[in-house]
Length: 393
Image (cartoon, rainbow, N blue to C red; front, side):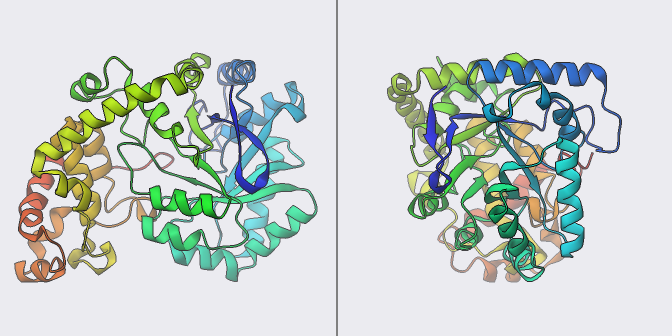
């Protein structure tokens, strides 16, 4: 497995990381893990290490994941593994310390190579981590050697991530990026300029459910598997250091490991496929739309009904250009139900407001009239029922 320097942490991190949110017995961490699940995890870890995938990344909120890892990791030499977990900020330092200590006990770990504040999805959450003393406490644990390096994971809006990256305590970031979701590229460049490690979250699930792609997206990516295209597209940028592969079975790593082996040779094909995909987006309303449809749009908190217009237009593009119905529907129906993980409301709120209010909200957009036509169409095609994000089912 090829490695890259993980920013200022100086860790040589594998280009593929073992994400730990798919193998667990349950999303309820108080449930009993099954022997079969633990045995399967042992095989997953063994195969990952055989491939050179030695970065193991989990979270307190991933149900029984930490417990199952705690049963398996003692079977392997500790110095072979880069161990990472994540804990969300809490309203009090005491509660945060208790949660972190629980995670480490559950993992049977006396130190973490990487630790991330989980879900810094807006500026107030970062401020809470500062004001409660959580960041200061983590820096003390770093000085004591309990934590190797401190970072954060985020689903925040692109502009908010740019602000959060200014926090001097952070040495790396976990964030979205893929062909399907390119909006965090400025944040990745800023992370590079600050010499931060860059870890891409769930590229093939949040990047379009590419393990079950639409027929049209598959055809456009041919002869590559859509996941191979996505891996090579992301890792073709050396500003990115590793991408997560959430494994439910040992063989789940194999396609991604093959993509890394062929990474340089795949780049001409990736360029050609990207041009085809861009062409499908341009066929909707022209290249200006693809490149500028978010220009002048209000932040969801400043929109009548708190409607997440940029998010809805993004999903509309994927549906219209690539027939990504399942993915677009799933994410659309999180709106209004996922809090800061996918913030804002869906377009069903449109009928509650005077049309002039939305006209005014979109006054800075060059595509105001088109957007006002798209929003109700998107709601009609995508709305099914409110969904819950993973971990809340």
